[in-house]
Image (cartoon, rainbow, N blue to C red; front, side, top):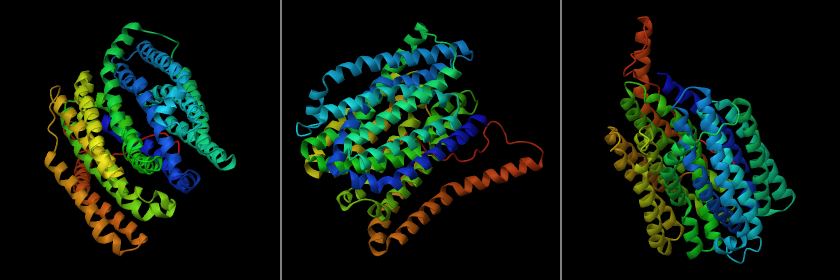
Amino acid sequence: MKPVRDLLKHSSVYMIGQILTRMTSVLLLPFYTHALTTADYGVVGILDLTCAILSTFIAGGMISAVTRHHFDGDDEQHHDGVWWTGLTMVFVVASVLAVPMILGRQTLADLTLGTEITQGAWFYLLAIGTMWFTVLGMILDNYLRVLKMSGVFVMISLGRLVVNIGLNVWLIAGMKMGVEGLLVGNLIATVLHTSILMCVFVKTRGGYRINTDIGWQMYRFATPLVFTALGSMLMHEADRYFLRIWESMSEVGVYSFAHKIGFAVNTLCLLPFISIWHVAIYDIERLPSARHIFEDVFGWFTSGLGILLLGASLCVHPVLPMLTPEAYGDAMDLISVVLLGFYVFGLSFMFEVPSLLTKRTRLMLPAAIGGVVVTFGANVALIPVLGTWGAAWAGVITYATYSFTILFMCRRAMKLNYPWLRFAGTTSAFIATYVILRYACFPHIGPVAQIAASVLVCAMWSAVLFGKQGLEFAVTWLKHKRQGGSLPAERQPEPVPEPVTEELVEV
């Protein structure tokens, strides 16, 4: 089945790029954690949060809008109008928001970083410049995904990685610039990355064309998604602001480090899959067995993602102490809770499919609103009592509220019968496996044995959850091959997609 084959093929290409990216980040982790203090990480975390919120507000909804409207027509003039219009809209909105922020950067720095950070205004100037180029790059990245140019995407992304890492090492270690060096390196790498993407876009796209009718349609489609994406970003990151109120900047740094590791792992496991999934759903929609495919992918997705995140949660305990100073040691157990939250949040990418297919994106607004309300309430209630642990568990509660509210609302557009019994059983088994190994086994064995045990249990769960299905597929395929036929088109077994995912590197 071609859409599912495309899903596997392009996810695999994205996965290769992400594996190389994350391996590089892990190898450089000792450098960054020794070069930057926990307080430095706190400053970077607040800057990242503020600019991420702005990036999401500007381009979050438009990415889905241009993807959806690209598939509304097959002629190149239509595609030219969609992409040039979307890019122009993002350019205008980014510029309008960036100018007042630059003018008021000192006030912004005092409010978010505190008056004790004397370079706050300069930090924000660098961060806002990076944000402006980033949002343009988000649309251009998406253009490559929609055209399934995964090889080009990965090459450009890896080139950006090499430049970014080289600049950061030179500026932080060689020039002794600390946080400033990190921000300058990110700005230069982002400018180069976006410029190259723009060259590819101009070369492969037709002449500049603005279609106001399509623009208004994309605006109506994107507006609910903007608030949904903004709510999602606040759910991911707003806990940093609350920690800044009740805890020290060093505690913010430790939590930001744990969240960064968790996000990096989640990115490796999720985004390559999601990058092509948001394109493949429109191809799958055209098939007679579309509902069955969506239901099957949910089962594969939750099982595969759960195994990967379980392995990551276990492996941080023997690996992280070898890579980071003792000051970051408290982040180890926090990472497992952060990953549990990301696992629950990942369900939303499955649950939102009906609203995207039917263009009823407003159905996701209640989830965004509810998620923001819960994240504020949970952080206010838990952080004063539990500190950084309160922020981590507030994230799990928030993500559960968000994902299952999306499920409830989107069932109005299309009801899919997900394999809930399998989901509940595998999720419970993953949590039980982590608790038993972490608290009953790991205290009594060394780091090498801990890594071996982690790999062994993940291999065991892979065999249990996917082995039978893979064997059935192979037997069916061989049977039809001997008969000179092919697999039935309506409900044929498909290879299990490897749920992985994507993100461009910084540090």
